[in-house]
Amino acid sequence: MEFRRVVITGMGAISPLGNEVGSMVDAVAAGQCATRIIEEWQKYPMLRSKVAAPVLGVDEKIIPRQDRRSMSKMSIYSALAAKQAIAAAGLSDAQVQSERTGCVISSTIGSTNTLASSIEKLLPDYDISKVTTMEFFQCISHTAALNVANHLTIRGMVYSPSAACASSMQSIGMGYDLIRWGEQDRVLCGGAEELHPMVTGSFDVLYAASKGFNDRPQQTPRPFDRDRDGLVCGEGAGILLLEELEHAQKRNAPIFGEVIGYHTCSTGDQISQSNSAAMIQCMTTALNKAGVKASEVDYVNAHATATPQGDCAEAEAIRTIFGSRTPVSSFKGHLGHTLGAAGALESIVCVEMARRNRLFPTHNLKNLDPDCAGIDHVVETREARTRTLLKNGFAFGGINATLLYRFNDRT
Image (tube, rainbow, N blue to C red; front, side):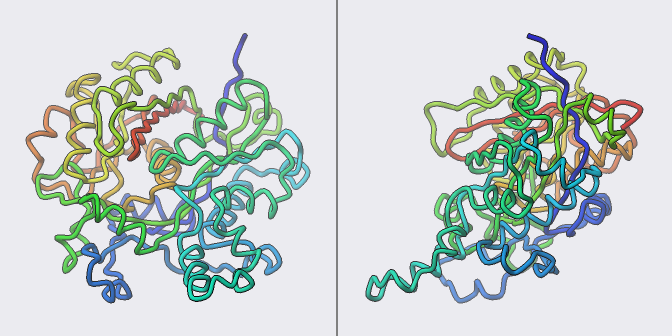
């Protein structure tokens, strides 16, 4: 069977560093950090991490109230980002609403804000009449996918994989597979997340959330740095429109890059500890499936969330495959860890970075952890031509995902 080629023809972003692709990438290029003190979290004395990377300035009223009623913040972010991607791709309403257009949008869980408020209303006397149907649609795990599909009248295949921090990596990978196998001609792919202290608290309990920089938030997270003390939760949505190459060429669509490989696998035996062997397996299999040699990869975008153990495991895996010859950086120091949106938002930054012939550095990497040495860390912006790029997403729960992108002179 001859697989079809899959290209990126549109992108959209609602992020902690800007609410469209250009402003987000410009902020990353300028070395900005989205981490802020969250004042309302001060009322939770047992929550040790008081910082996060919030989305600011979103005008939710762009979406009609009738559609907004079933949307939480993450669905609003997803819908706005999806509309940006469609506009960038130049798709007509008829093309969006075709049965050949699908939607694969994920999140770690549904809306934690709505879930928490619903439980608070329900608990005193278990009066279910206090909980509305619309709250249910905001809480369910596929809320972002269903709301985008409803808002845009998408009639093709709709999926919503949930794999923690690897969620939107799997979404892009699934969209890629649906197109190359001939099931769909175009797919809106990505992920979304929204902030809530319960989410940060979950990482805090695991000793994985940053808590030592509450008084200087711009200095955290610190991927690969010896002074890193954990991740910083973020929120937002990233959407990529993937399209079969010939369809894109026939309508003279913009082509931002090509997806050439994908693999996802499970660690299999460790639910909360990173495993370099599984990371090696994931990257190696993705390379093999794409027919790409490690020596042909021009840049690796690391997952690197700034957890003490996770960064070391990923550095070891990258070192094993690529040695010190391939530049590596992480965007968590800029954007925070946007969880279900991370793979998509960071992929968008990667695409635009390659188009600008630049390599963006790991923000807040000042003193390299010796255990993360032996790879080519990008600590300052470099001019570089990137043809083949590898992107990682490694999740708590042992789910790993790797994507490969390619860029040519046209993109």
